[in-house]
Amino acid sequence: MISGMIMDEKIIEFNNVTFMYDAEDEETGVVSAPAVKGITLAINRGEFMAVLGRNGSGKSTLAKLCNAIYEPYEGDVIVEGMNTREEENGDKIRRKVGMVFQNPDNQIVATIVEDDVAFGPENLGIEPKEIRRRVDEALKSVNMYEHRLRQPHNLSGGQKQRVAIAGVLAMQTDCIVLDEPTAMLDPVGRAEVLQTVKRLNKELGITVIMVTHFMDEAVEADRVVVMSSGEVVMDGTPQQVFSDIEKVRAYGLDVPQSTALCAALSIKENVLNAQQCVDVIDRICGGVK
Amino acid sequence: MISDITIGQYYSGNSVLHRMDARMKLILTFASIVAIFLCKNFFSLGLMVIFTVAATLLSCVPAKMVIKSLKPIIVILIFTAVLNIFYTTGGDTYFKWKFIEITEEGVNTAIFMAIRIVSLVVLSSLLTYTTTPTLLTDALERILSPLKVFKIKVHTLAMMMTLALRFIPTLIEEINRIMNAQKARGADLETGGIVARAKALIPIFIPLMISSFRRAYELAFAMTCRGYTGGEGRTRMKQMKLRVSDFIACAVVCALVGGIIALNIYFEAVI
Image (cartoon, rainbow over all chains, first blue to last red):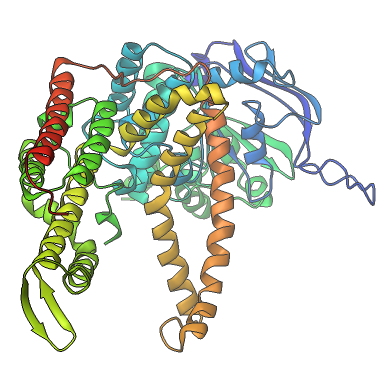
């Protein structure tokens, strides 16, 4: 649906990338299993991509390869024409690709919300007035402006995570990588964060890469990438990926509940969320009546 | 419970003291604390008390909160007062019973010390009530920045202070969580002698240390991602500018110190 609108310009490219945490054991000389192996993937500008996979499938590693935190063991990661291997590109790449982590407590630096959002732009050496403007704007776009003077530890998980997102927005990066941003949140917080991310993608055209293990979140993306044992095993729109229920389950994942329900009812149509499910069942039952 | 903790003890407001430049506030607080110890008689001490009360009123911090800040020192206050009453002797004797003797000088010293301690605590808590921890560490960084000449990493120190303050509530929460987890596994934290209790704390502190290291690691990651490379080339959103009111405050404190010295010379010393 949306994929047709996306510009074809590639923002991040993985070329046959392999990464391992401990490259080689000095004593035994045994090379450890790679966390990510032979990945070739291109992320287009403006895309909302969800990365799925069971624990240990390499999805978090993939995220950290995107902004030069990790350097590939083999192959190259190219971010807007810059290779993450080159040391001097590190800072420049991190100005293009921001990152939000799983635990909101471990990424908030300051004792006041607005000071924390200002941390990124302050590091970039931006003029004070411009920082102020960016901070206000970023807080408004995640709906946290009225909380700007509060202390982070008094906020809910979803609010903290939105502050973290605002921190990246204030740096005006082209791309945001979120590494399981909702894993530690309650359903309300999860919905808040997901809505925020979706809106930023649609309204500001920010490229989003979201690692998640919630199928309902992946359904909201333009593109779903499934990883297993360090490899990309499925890649396509949510419709395409979740239509092959057997295959998805074989990789240790579940399909959205609505999809599973319709499959169990032997409904041939591709259903992804509760609304579609209701519509389809309603139509079929209507026919029976 | 946990959510009640305020980092530092900032009381948000918009009084004259709140709007004052944090650097000036820090320096002036320090100067007035020194002034407390310059006082030699009740006249100069009285001036100091007037200054303290005036500053409290100007800060618009409720009296209740200021009194609350005195709570932790009540024991020290009583202890020093009692010690001074009994151990300092001189002047007229008010009361004598066996070896206990209460004299004029003893009473004077006791009152004097008590007032000193109270004004000291009130003045320093006014600083933390009216300044956010971020501004305070910021101010400290700027005041100490000349030390860069001696290769002291002022920015790093200030950043460490900010992060330490930031993580106090997080770690308190963590301790509670670990304690509950260990209690659920049958850990006994409340009974036993001092040694047994100290031993019981080991299963609390080891997980706490481990998780703190993990947090530190993740935080460092997050900071790198947000472009942190140290103090070089950093700017600040909140600029600090000295205004006329700051210089007036400075003049007031200078007058205070001058007044205290004059009163010390003019009247006889008590202490």
